[in-house]
Length: 335
Image 1 (cartoon, rainbow, N blue to C red):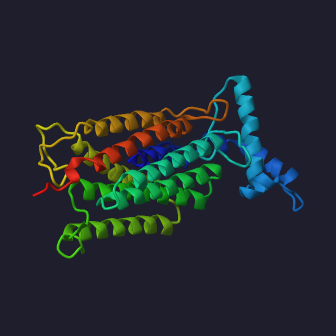
Image 2 (cartoon, helix red, strand yellow; image 1 turned 90 degrees about the vertical axis):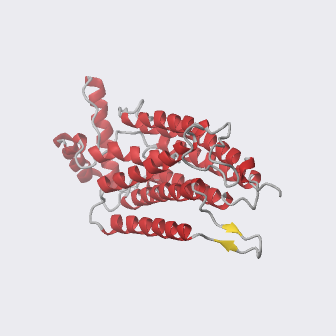
């Protein structure tokens, strides 16, 4: 659920600046890069091992050096700090372009790994949603891994892997949310033990599969990545997902959904309000994305702070899923 906000909001500042950053368009930057290239970039030029491993070229290194040289001048003169190629100037570390965001992405990944372990150990093996929650946790781990890779080096392939992995998390989250809230997950027949799948389940599974494949195919075949469409897709899916979960937290007086298969619509567990709290916390955290500012010490910016804030909220969400999965509403009454 949390990733539904992460990649929607993360696209917004990038969408604004990717086509025209004032720093890289400035003549002093372009002249600096040209001079650096002429002086340093020869066949015998060798970069450090860390830069080579993270696929920096001599030209990339010239852009990096010129960016920081001009930023130093801007800070001394008290003038505006510019963005370059859609990003603020960050100090790199072992070839990582945004080391703070890399570290915080890995921290989020750690919480999802821990969440997967908790789900696996605490949710009964015969619970109908167990496999879906475990799969979502694995998909989330993959997404945060590629987030770390992308923040290590912003390249066309790492960018696509980051966005495609994120879209998979968002869409799969909506997929299993519909199954959970509308009780459309497969069940086992008491007569012969066979798995029973409803027509709605088959239709919904097909829609989500086709939607994701179409999304990835469309963005892959374009000559230029369509950031506007990608943002609209993630925003629509993510908003729908969060709205559905908010139905779970509605008061007893508004029984719009039947939360559990063996309870009435009016049954509302004591922890139901945690969903609304989670949405509020997530919304507050994502507000950091809108506070786009030059990085503190050229290390931490608003985007890095967003990553920092989301990890503990992730644990909150896994704790809720476990409470929900262990509720008595899943147990069929004895006859």
